[in-house]
Length: 392
Image (tube, rainbow, N blue to C red; front, side, top):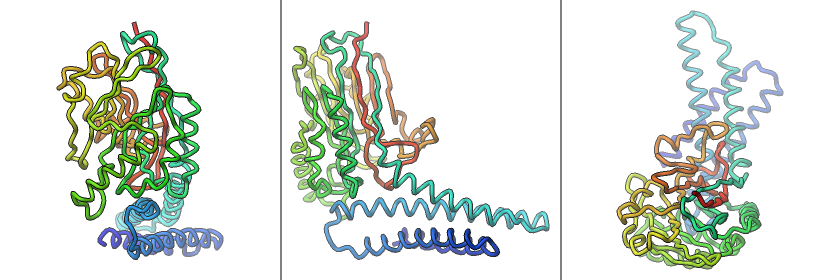
């Protein structure tokens, strides 16, 4: 409840600052700002009661979505209240030093509130649903000419409940991936956020993205149910089994520390997957040696991971696959305009895009869904189309 108490305090501070700032202002401006602030408070209060009074299954998609809706409200209240409070304190200090009234602080606070509110609203209503197709060529030295031009649709971090109320947008994204006619569809996990119930009937949506040579997936660290409130080993076993069934019903071959050899265009290739478990600062990975050691060095191998931090651990098997794909980072769901910098870079060495190490490549997708807060800022949801090229 401390979290909600902090938000209540932020909301009251914002009311106090705005009411003072609006004194003597144009009545149209006063009504517009007060109506907008009332809408923000109403969203907070409504969500609060819907969350705390809810007695159903926590991982039911609508309830799971409410948790990240509250994350958006928290971002708005804390950002707006914090920035307005900073301006007000700065103005008071300036007044005491200069011995005159700082009239600019009132209008600055009004403008800050409007900017923060509209920016966060855009991240919630538009940016998080604006799925992009990102295209990237990957050159693999020594690749069999028959595999030149191999097309891969890379999907990750769907967090299905984050699409509650907008499953049509998710379905459109899956259809768009299917229209690319990829040879392979690869999914790097985090189908859910809290529990298996979030899957609902979404397997019928995910099946709309299929690959000519198959669809393969690994689970993310959320998919084992350890983020479920009151998690215990019994729930974890049930969650893993139910998620496995749902993933397979979605048309994927689930790779749990396993590798499969497939034949495509008359050439054999391997698709491998290593598990990821745990929470941040305590991540655990599967058995790279078990998965990769039996594969011949001459075989073109694609490795699916969830967390890109584990990429170079594959070296314990004596080899790093020619191509590895991962997700997990979400690009922090936020970046500066044009994606030129993201706070993800402060936490993850490899957080989005293509990386190379001794001729092997890693591609990290910023994913499709959201967690923590149902918003994205200059870090749009994406489906990545990788085209593998033969290098000489």
